[in-house]
Length: 439
Image (tube, rainbow, N blue to C red; front, side, top):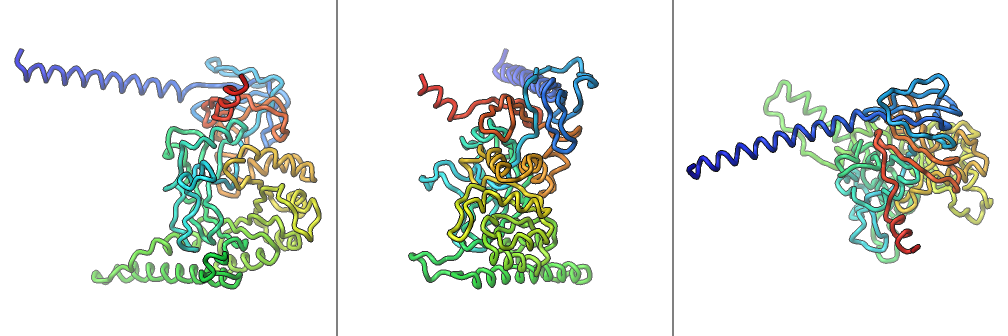
């Protein structure tokens, strides 16, 4: 056999091996996708359709296919059955504001991609460009039942960039990021003032300056949108028409001006809330309120806006002129006024404590069912994701948690977590360190 024939033969063998491997991989993937899992005998908190004391929930191909009482629900013969007797089954929790994947060690600047501070107005910054899927903080959060999260930049800028919606499982950022640019924070808490001692000359240093800067940004975006429309109209009859220069900063604001996406409007005190809402209304922005922990004087006004409100962390200390429980009871005070309350960690390292924040709100007057919705259904509704997330219903994503007690109780241990129908290993760096050093 000559050298060329040998080479051709090796190529043929290699090609056959690759084809066989591809077919085998396809079979394995198909088998994994078609796996049917049934959780049987547990107490099911559906969130939208009450509680099933002794129920069955079946998942296949990443979706929920059956939910019902054990006595009247047939389990598919091919299903892998997990005995959930004595357990509580509930939807995967959704944290509506986190910094997961943008920070690892707070004291190490090289592990922080939280915010771009070179300018106050940075809507063209995209969290998906910085999201670090390999962060150790995600496995820590998901073993306590958090399966999805909004990831936002830090709040040091008034318009710091655009958020992403993630699932807390995947081999890469591409697999974990479900929605890019889902919303944009508009921060008006006072934290954004450039009045630190080392850069006093920077703008803005006052609430007036912040408002003027925001107003100018949206006016410029409106002008940019009009120029684009004028060009598109003119180009239909004039082939020499010149398109306006592309401006990423202004372009990023256009979907929000059109009402296609909501902004998350953060304001901390009553005056901040009123000014920020006035700006949002001036430009007809669709918005969700956030960080109103010290706006007790404006609660009736906030309720009149008929928008969801994100609160968290609720164990923030009161100001000097507030009751000791002013922040703790805020979710209950808002809910009494008809507001859909959403609870968020506003953190990265403490996302795992999300259910305990909801439990704390219950201790200070928030009805239990509303507390559970505050970390499941209401976030999904606020961000337009409730078709797939937020409750246990047929057709929704199989993001399911199985625990040995009340999901809002610190004594409860999570036993199983499913994301898109796949069981997640109950392991993380903290558990490994505990096991290593407890010996």
